[in-house]
Image (tube, rainbow, N blue to C red; front, side, top):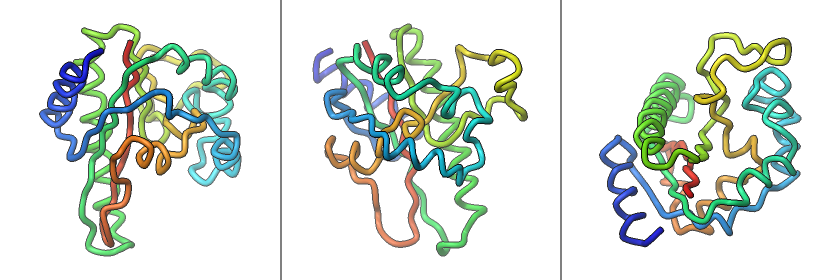
Length: 181
């Protein structure tokens, strides 16, 4: 994919409501067991409860195999201001906006890139209650694993690809990516 095509995708992402975008070099994707260990700590409450989270999303080696064929990608962020570090209402609103924009852009990109691999922010929330592990995923074609579920340290991915992760006090940025063939 040419730089011009990638820049066009960045513009498309901004049109979909993302505040910051950047070209992602898939060669910078280092799937780390330490990040997966953070999932194991289960601070979000989704470990072993969601098809898109570990262990449901596959082993680190299976995830590594999935990302290995991609040669292009983009990073997308939704950044917002908070009144203070306890402004949970703004955090939730920002997360919902990011996920909506992400799903909308995914739908748009999937038309041109049918083998698109979207990696989001946070656990998949398509269903109120996930069927994991008793029944197959209801929407495997729409389910989204997070970057962290794949063992990616988001701060490092941002740094390695020239996009900020931290925008100052009382700000929050949700980061996701799309890998493209």
